[in-house]
Figure 1 (cartoon, rainbow, N blue to C red):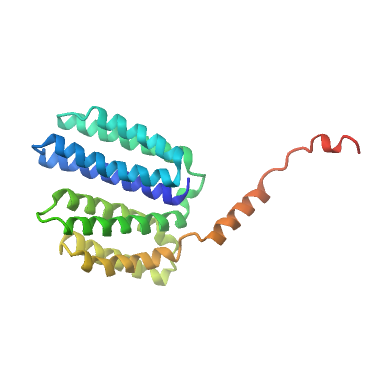
Figure 2 (figure 1 turned 30 degrees about the horizontal axis):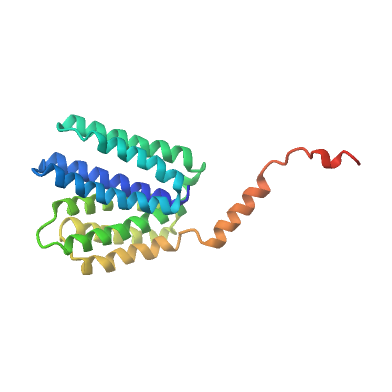
Length: 231
């Protein structure tokens, strides 16, 4: 699985977490409207995953259908439905990620970069509304939490003298989201500061080709077949 696909999976999981959290906290009166909005947002993300990895998208589509098919009406059942979805993401990740990918800082550089872009999009979407959007606010906070986890995994690859830069940038962003309720215009330079660090560690096409070539060279050579028969 490409790191970009993994990033989309984490974004989808964050969205489900936010929607379940909103339902548990607010218990929306218009259940049909809640479901329609959820379906629309989830469908968009599954389409993004499909553009990257059709197999992963198919598995996530099945998990989403299972989640939506029986949206429960009590808190415990809603939590259980969310947990089943999250475990489906875990199983897909365990099967599709290569050994070592989750320990590779480059993977988390991609995740951090992509989740912060989602955070900016969420901020812009909320700002476009004429009334406060508690759903969007919850999504933004959960995206930020996931981004912070990715930054913590990436920091091991950053030179020691540059680590405070990444941590300071993430902390400024956290204050802006949690306490200052910054506008999209206020968030953008803070997000870009973190992304500049992340993009220095994203895998390039050259490094991807190099990794593939090394992998081919390290593959065990099988016995030569009938080509030697006439020697």
